Each structure stands twice: as C-alpha cells, then as structure tokens.
Length: 196
Image (cartoon, rainbow, N blue to C red):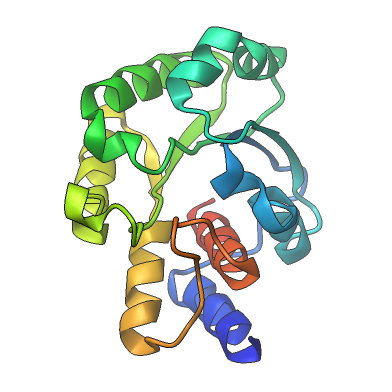
C-alpha cells in the first residue's frame, strides 16, 4: 500500500503538478467512481488544502442522469467554481459514446457560461468490461478526442492507472467491477491535481 501511495504521488509530480492557486474551487460531478474511499475530492483536498471542493455523486449515474435531475446544473449556475470535473459512468464513454459526447457538451456549455473550466475525468479500464471495448486505449482515444473538440482539459486517470499497472502489475488500484481501491482513488486525485 505504501508503494502504491508513493507511486501515485510520484505520478502527480511527474505529470507536472504545481501548487494550486489559493482559493481554487473544484466541483466534482460523477458517481461511485468519484465517491468511494472518501472521494476524489477529499483526496484532492489532502494534496492541496487551499482548494475548496464539492461533489455531486450518485451511484451508477451517467452525465445524462445528472443533467436531467438538475442538481449538478444548479451547482454550476451558483458559480464560484474554478473547475468542474465531469466523470461519466465508466462504460458509457465507450458503449454509448454519442450520449457521452452530447451530455458532456451540454455541461461544458453551462460550465464555461458560469466562468469555470471543464475537466473530463478519464476513467480506467474495467476488468469486467474489457471484452466490450472498455479498455485504456479506447477510453484515452474517446476522452482525448472530446477534450480537443470542446477545448476542455482531460485528467488522464485511466492512462495513469494503465501506466502504473504496467510498471507494477501487482498494484491493487481497482476491484473486478472497476471501482477504485483507496490507492486508486488517491491516484485519480493526484491526476486531477496535476491537471489543475
């Protein structure tokens, strides 16, 4: 576990993480991938105590569901965010790519309209869904293409997971259905930190 946490911190530094500006505020919109283990927001706050965070996460939710229930949109419209991190349901970006693109685009418009910046949180390969195409390479391709299209930043957590597992195959970053372990949540937070 200590190795995994050290590796995660090293990844953040290697990605060029700089001390976040004082007063930066980050809203996370996602599901259990964002919420487990205290949440990526809490881990980010541990990395940079000057960052204010809030999260809106409902287990299994897609961006479409967040858009339709309105709570995330209300939080965006309240304003005051420097960044809004969008985490799509882990299979949707591949299995329902058009919906992912549509709803990420809707949110991006609202985020930019509120004066904040959009970050797309690239999820990681799911062992139970790799046969269906939910692979690191496919996720990177879809997220990077959408980031470029929207002019949004991509927090490449999926790439960091894949790279870490290539270097140290025994790392436990997620369980069979893809949900992150504590080390996986910390690694994802390091990637978000490096992105902002």
